[in-house]
Amino acid sequence: MPKKKLRVGVIGVGAIAQSQHLPHWKELEGEGRVELIGVCDIVKDRADQVKERFGARKVFYNHKRMLAADDYDIIDVCTQNRPHCPITVAALKAGANVLVEKPIAMSAKEAALMVNTAKSAKRTLMVAQHMRFEPAHEKLKEVVERGALGQIYTASTIWLRRRGIPGWGKFHIKKESLGGPLIDIGVHMMDLCMWLMGFPKVVAASGKVYRMFGDRKDLVNAEWGEPYPPKEYDVEDYALALVRLENGVTMRVETSWAANIPEERSGLTILGDKAGISTNPLGVFGYENKALTSSRFDWLPKGGGHRGEVRHFTECIEKKVPVRVQPNESLQIQKIIDAIYESSKKNKEIPIK
Image (cartoon, rainbow, N blue to C red):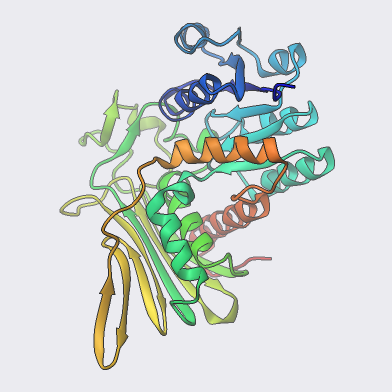
């Protein structure tokens, strides 16, 4: 008896869906594992074009009508941030398993609703934190899990753009996206760092966010796309935070869309009393027999994180096994983000439960 193909629908078919999700669904469709049943977008022309380009069976312009028209095994939510929660909740209640783009939601309250809905509906929910699926990061996870770092005591994440405010979509509008680089690219680094450390319990966060460039008419800040209206810009363009974790462990977070630095830089370090790891340069660094040591990876498997996450999620649904990015972990990241914004506003450290 042939294996059942999973019925897939994609809601929100803008740039991220077209470049990093739909090609991988089509690859899986070519392998006979899924069927791309429907695509949906509130922009009619875009939805129509994507239907033809990727060969979806149906096209919709309203997610409620899409969910009512067919039964789906998987719904992939690739919209702007604000609709993540209502669309995910509706899809879970309709009986679908949901892969949703980062960040999980606009607040920890929304994220908790999504997590609880998945539990009550007995469906799988996973946030598309693609960095966990990149071969280099998977290799570092192996290093940490075999205890090579010893006692981990601190970590640092950084993703600083010199000029890279998104010039498309609604990333620069608070009511649509909640925040700027902290929730856009900082969320990736925090999630990766916490995952590598085994997701220790979060205790508190203290941070400050700044808007120094994004609303200025005298600067061109967009890295790609058309320039946004500066009057609309009401999110931060730089954020700095210290996150306190259990057992005295700390995590430093720094991120920007625009900053007066020589060039863009990104990466993370995690330090232990036996060794430390770094993503840039990629390697393991320690000491042995009165000498400092370093270990690099001469070869790693090819494969992008977005492809890996889509294939992983599909396999988990096929085999009914847990996903790598657990919903409660994404909820914890959202709690950190909420606390950093609150800390910046109140100028004090915010406890996290």
